[in-house]
Image (tube, rainbow, N blue to C red):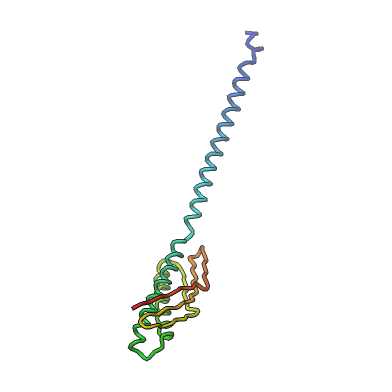
Amino acid sequence: MESLRDDTKGQWIALSGLVISLIIISLALLANQAVIAGYYSSNAALELPKEDIRELNLQTRENAKMVMDLSYEINSSSNQSMSTLYTSLFNDCSEQMRYLYAVHGESIDVSLANMTYNTTGASVTGQVWANISFNDGKTDYVSAPEIIDIEVGK
C-alpha cells in the first residue's frame, strides 16, 4: 500500500486529460462564435433594401418615358404646352408611387427637377432630371438628380 502513495503517474494522466478537455472546449466556443458572426454579418447585408431602391429607380425611368409619350399624344390634340403636360403627368405618377410605397411602410419622394426635349418629326428625344429619395426607417437613399434619357418614336 505504501508504494501506491508514492506513485504519481496517474496524476499526470489526469492533469493532461483536464488540459486537453479545456482546449477542446475553447476550440468549440471559438468555432461557435465564428458561425454566429458569419450569420449576423450575412443577415445585415440582407436588410439593405437594394432591390426596393433599384425598383424605384427603374419605375421612375419607365414613368418618365411613359409620361413623355402621353404628353406628346395629348399635345397633338390640345392647346397645352408639352412641358406643362409633362410636369402635371409626372407629378401625378409620383403621387401614385408615393401611395404605393406608403402601403409597404416606405417613404419616397420623386420630383421633377428639370426637363428638356426636342421634337423632330414623329419622335421626341430629351432628358429628364428627377430627384429621388427613399426612406424605410433604416435606410435613407437620395439620388439628386437622376438623369434619364428619353426617346419616344412614332
